[in-house]
Length: 269
Image (cartoon, rainbow, N blue to C red; front, side, top):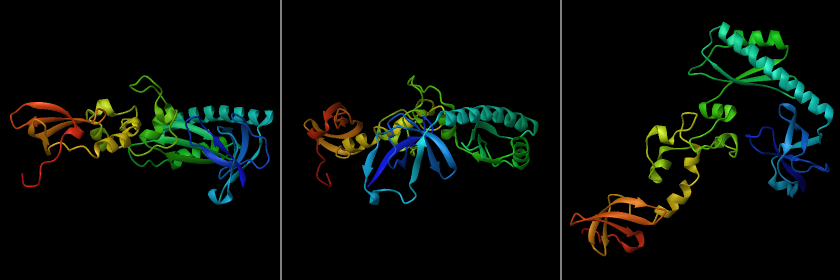
């Protein structure tokens, strides 16, 4: 068994599991941990729990210590350096007329590397830009091209619901969203109504998708002929939440019925 705690490095980021050993880590504590990129400061977002060794990842990293005042000063110094690096990189992008949009700059805790995220329509030759950055900051430089959804997660903003975008608050992973999800929920397929700030389909389309598919799996599909208490008819609409369907009867009348009150007619009829 090992004592495991969930750590976040950014408010909108994923939760990573770390071994606390015997450190008295509590929820909301700032801690220094070991990562693949070196040391980093994160926030404990869960209580410590004992987990069997066989359920843990083979490359599990450790919490080294509770963050000290010196660690916090180092983090603050890195943040100032990130702001300076961001502005410097913006100027160089403009000077070199590179077709890219800088999103953010991040410095590793130990100051060994700076990572810049950007978006672009196509591949960008940024070799000269990297030389400018290395010459100015004297550390390893990495430029990462990201997509529109990752950009929205970093920049944040308000969605059409009036709340801060989900990708920057409650979502740990950016799961795939498809038009099929909107269709299953009988939503408008107008791109302006189902797209988020990133211009892609809204993440929230996936929240109730499984519920709709479960409710509709036993309901007659649109276009199918059914037998109703009022006669035969064709299904033209479904209301999964009410478990109702709308049927056009052979007489031309439209009827709204509970799905349980209709049945498919025998084959060949």
